[in-house]
Length: 293
Length: 293
Image (cartoon, rainbow over all chains, first blue to last red; front, side, top):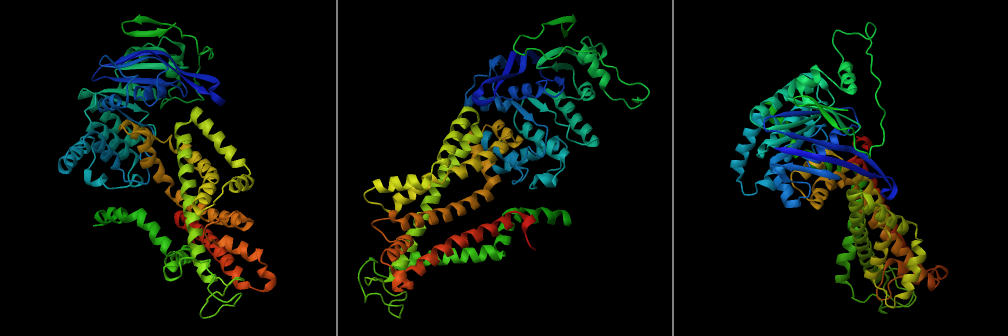
């Protein structure tokens, strides 16, 4: 469905754009309908940049992104708007996703304004109620309120409801539960599972391996802007081949392990080199399990 | 019951809350009363008086009386008629100058802050150049080249020199606001940049913009008075500044014609002072931490 092919992103930084910072290097992957793909990595590994490029909030420097075979990187405003009917995103901070001086349900109203200008009020409010119910929100409890009157979990779910108002095929979820507390986390996560059942593709960007393991079929591990390991969740987490992946897995805190008894021992990794050269090529070590050399 | 009452109370919320506090803030009320009172005098007054305030209508150098409320000038012109016309032109210069400065400042600030990159660097440079230009010297040069100086040309010149502060502040605020997630969300809804600026970013700095208009207005009136006083005022109209300039030119101070220069001086002081008081009051209205109650 969605396919990234040799995507690079470099930013111009410094005065008059004199320097370049490469954030994403030669990343290729695809997402199928009904699949959750997790992108995992440390801060600065380029995972959020990938999410934003898929959403076309930032442009691609090199390479292409295709939705059902159609390249969307060169789209004009009108085509991009059509693209947004099928691909939507939810961001990390629920409180920053809402304009604080307007009521929260304005995010739903703007969708009507942009995409369904012809739909009648009554029909639309039915549709909104339906979308809210499907994400487990009570319409009377969340409509006509200001963002600060709702909880983070409610706000995030309302954003998912907003995406569901459109006939989306892919949802980009950029760290959507890292700002939520533990009890609401699992609700939102299960909601993503429901969406998957309905045939939606989800690009799940996270730094939390256990969440990636819980929800996704496939996982991509990124470091310094490049993919280091990619494959089915069970294979990557069960048999990590890249030293960085092993380190990541070893760093997951566990409930019954203490630092004093068994400190985590990390392997030495290659330092960050010249980001403008192509990253090490991926090698298939097992069926659908790729590791950087 | 409480659940149904709370949202309604908040629906009225915000907007009228500001009006509520504004109308109960003595500084805002006093300031606006003075500004609006003098404005009404300038707008309505001329209809009851002669259209040409420079006509020689009475005895020379007469003190205020029932017939000539503010006395007459050295040449027998009605000071009150001049005063009322002068108020009108001072408000026109202030309003027009503020409007021009505000429009230019807003456009430059929003474009620079929202687009960023090279556009920002160019506009920022332009802003800084205009900012450090010795406005008075340039104005003297420009004014002396204009054969017929009117109120409008004066307002345009003032407007074109007082926008940089607005542009800088707007740019800085736009810079932080454009990175909020709700701006990205508006992009995902297919909104174009101008719509996002007007509907997502601008409402967040509405209070600042209101106050900057007030300060620009006061600043333009003051600047116009200064230009008038050094003899670069309108040649085809009466303003408060030219009245004072004439009074000084014909040594009213030595002749004891205080009624010639005190009213215009008082009016300028009152308008500008009242605008500053209003501004301080509005600051308290928009910033609850400053409220005395």
